[in-house]
Structure formats: C-alpha cells, structure tokens
Amino acid sequence: MSKTIRLSKIAINQLDLLPKDMRNRVKKALYALSDTEKSRILDTKKLKGVNGRENVSPSN
Image (cartoon, rainbow, N blue to C red; front, top):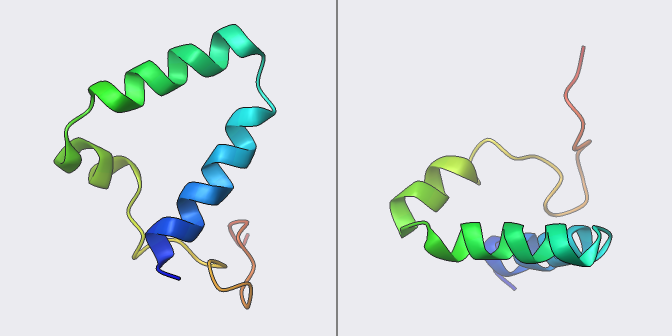
C-alpha cells in the first residue's frame, strides 16, 4: 500500500470525527485545490510515522 493511500485513510478517519457541516466544507476545499497545492499542504517526505515505526508528533 502506498504512502498516499495510507495517508488518505488516516485523513478520512480524522474527517469523520468532525461535525458534518465542517467535514463537508473541508472536503469541498480539498477538492477545489489543484494537485500542486495539495502536495504543498501534504508533503509526504516530511511526515514520519507513516509506516508506524516513528513518532508522528514533533520532537521538542
């Protein structure tokens, strides 16, 4: 499974926790973005913990 698919599943789970009206607004905003804008928001190279081996929270 690719990182993008795993991140998408995580994002969907997080969206499901939001109230329905806010969830719909977030989804509409994400669909309106171009692929380059989405890649700037979600830079997979900087993320850790996608494979479950590292801590996702920033280290202090």
